[in-house]
Image 1 (spheres, rainbow over the protein chains, first blue to last red):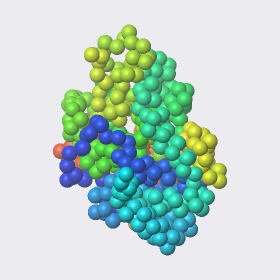
Image 2 (tube, helix red, strand yellow):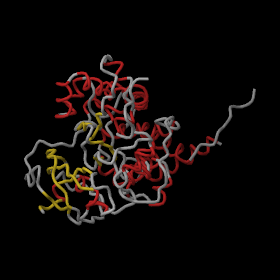
Image 3 (tube, each protein chain N blue to C red):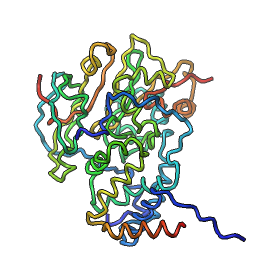
Length: 103
Length: 199
Length: 116
């Protein structure tokens, strides 16, 4: 698709944020998002091409604004929730429970 | 004693906890395996691997030849293989050619030799300009490529993964492989830095 | 594997998940061939960036046969085909103001190219 991800040659994104001290993961949730890909791999919920396409289908403005691992999180929700692995209802309920517990 | 501080969870934290906890309950994932995966990429698989490959190639011309002919096989000789490097091609910087790597469409990167990519590699500024203004990008990284040298940009659109074999700096003729490896930065193997001679 | 357990992690990482497939597919191009990229604008998944469409290049590498992402992403089959490393001059891609000496080398699937 001619999506926002197809960035080659575009202008207007400003300077490269070269931070030599950047860690691989800026917080714990990024670590979990990264690892989840491989946890899902044995079950065939999605292939890598499908995963990339799910990222590509994000809202264009969100794609640019959200961080890299939020792209992956969006893809998991697209491909796992309401798609056989997790129902939309149980996901919504669990999110609410976790938010509630945290106070 | 006060109660344990309750921190509000961010939206992504809530969502990943929800996904993970549900998948655990359904017996589909083992959180310890996920911990090990993270640990592997935070502590074991990283650019120090690629630096060893480069040092070996600089020291051993026959190895360098094998590396340029079949990158995956050659890095396999040093024990590096697998995920996101199954079909690896090593491209050599020479006095005539400077190579630089990008994945304009997402973030493809040679994990077995370089580990996980830096944030800037995966972001719009680099991905958009590396293919259309590589010399400008290199200038931002402090690298000036002479006009009469060719800049070659490799955009990894398929499942081939690339790695740059940087030029060996002068004054390193007597160095051991370990010493050579310590000179080689991650950025030099992406093609956004040169390897500096020893101080 | 049924579930990824800690003991399986090192092997999974070491083996990887190549998309190279050991099948014959028509080898339509060889190193040195001049090609033109098709003007494809699929609404589904593709690994053909917009900046290449309609552009002329030269085949520099024949990488072998791989799963085709455009179909695989949509469960429409692996459609294995050759992937070529194609050199495009900066002037061809970006116009006369571009650096005359520089180029991009991009991996292009067989389905994306025609002979020039």
